[in-house]
Length: 157
Figure 1 (cartoon, rainbow, N blue to C red):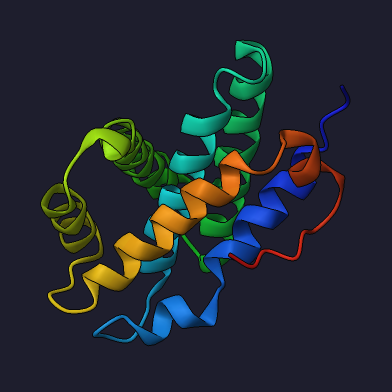
Figure 2 (cartoon, helix red, strand yellow):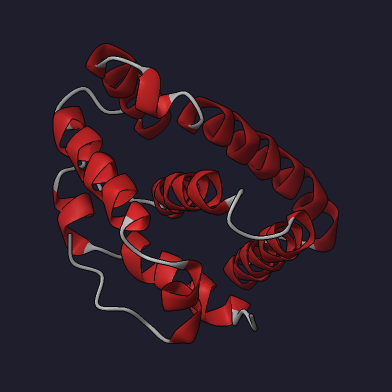
């Protein structure tokens, strides 16, 4: 199977740019908020597909996405000196989110609500995000990796 990593990345970005998500934030959204929402999308995506493709393909996808995030951060204006520190912080954050997402399916709503509240730093509307990511998780289970790698999907769930 030929995987188009750019289309997968673009689909994850399209999900992250969902305007409804940002209407539910209690504050003006920032680049950091968008990265965290991208990390949640990526975390659920990787958690679901990690056994569906080889480790090397999943690692390549992970590296591809991290490289694009780094390029985006460079475009914002971070210098070469600070980019390495920022990327290390972001990758650690991504690993933390992925480790929590692995528990998602077996946890109660309180865990899910606290996870969203903690990482998005919100006190209201966390139920909306929990419901959204639960629907996204189900959406992933009804699609194949090939669907994500062909072209930009109509991502409605």
